[in-house]
Amino acid sequence: MTSLTRKTRHRHGSNYRQDITSEDRLLHDVHPDDLVIPVMGLTGAGKSSFINRFCGEERMKVNHGLKSCTKEIGVALFTLPPTHPVWPGRRLVLVDTPGFDDTSLQGDLETLRRIAVWLADVYESKNMRVKVAGLIYLQSIGQTRMTGSSLLTYELFRKICGPNALGTVVMASTQWDTLLHNPSAGPIRERDLEEFWSTTFTHGAVYRRIDAEDPTRDTQDIIDYILQRHAVATQIQEELVESGKRVAETEAAQTLRETLGKWLGSAQTRGLSKRNAEQWKAFPINAGFGD
Image 1 (tube, one colour):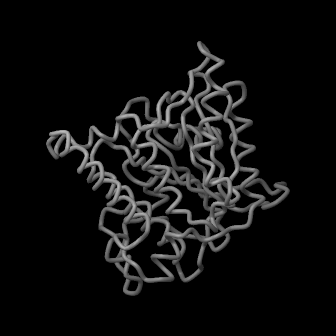
Image 2 (cartoon, one colour):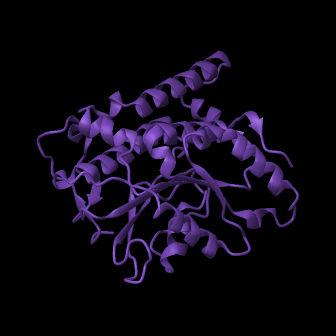
């Protein structure tokens, strides 16, 4: 990734730059006509696989375990063919983001900071205001219960996007091959997911299935759909760049603090230590998926 990213250099100006660390890798050589598409979701939902599948080769390391192997922002650059019907020859910037469920409370705060400053830096780069072409949210259909982490990731995604950007969003289910032994469960879980995500749909987001039959085609269709949308700034980009907020002052950070505070309170009520409070995140909430 060294050819695609750069170690950050602090620039005077926007307050959020005080939140950038020397270890952050920000996009090198931002183009004013870049088509930026962040891919978000829980650890193991298939974000890296989605990007690799679209690119036709392994650009991102794929996680096969429970812990996230995507700790930093990953970037895959892809030039659209000159015959592309909408954006011939334009550069796609596919962004592989870490999940908000890396098994530590502090880790979620760090994940939000990394995503927020990356998006803000691209938006503000050379004062070009590079917006996102769209955003993709992935969820494994193999997940049988909606956990605390699932709810937190979804709520943070909504706060990062904001109402205006939700019209460019695709909410997609992945890993349908995990249900080959129980195919009847798929449509039931899919219906539950669509109900759980209903707030995003009221603001223009759409649902797509990345099926086991032809995931490459489904992945291509999702990207094609996004490329027909109008680019828009996300809420967190506007908060950090236009409103001059620090990351901790954003609505996403406020949601994160409130949610973690509730989990810690519940953990203490049940006699759990603060060290073990993060186990709460794996507990099911009252939103199960039917089998």
